[in-house]
Length: 182
Image (cartoon, rainbow, N blue to C red):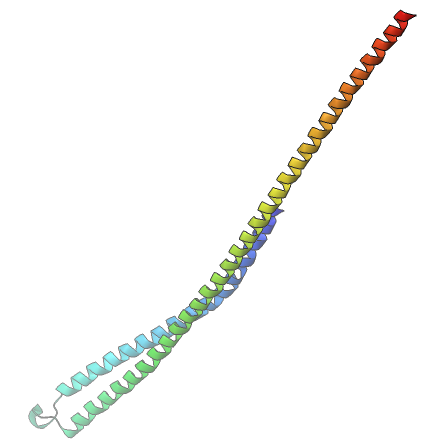
């Protein structure tokens, strides 16, 4: 019976942790998806910046020596696209940090909750240990009382047997004296 209660006690402590696990998996999945988005944006930025670098080197002016206004505009447009991608990267990175922050705060809350549960378990165990010690002391007191009662009963029986033996001898000797006197 004691083992059943111990099993039940620990099962009740483990069950909430098992039920909270799917949320952690969902958060991890969201974090991974967001991280992939940021990585894709970084790759896109790198590709566009490469296109910007190439457009800076292109010179379609007279004899390929000079840049035309259209070349400059094309470079500016590519640079504008790089800046827009950078803005998207900042926004997605902020979302990524928010997910990580939420995950961290959730983990902190779980740690606090588990600490409270462990403290409650420790208090319960301490309480049960003190009650167990009190019960052992009561058992020891009852055993001592029972031992004292047995000793008293044993002494009383010995005393009664001794008195019975003395009385028997007394009457036997007296009967023997009465028989000799007659």
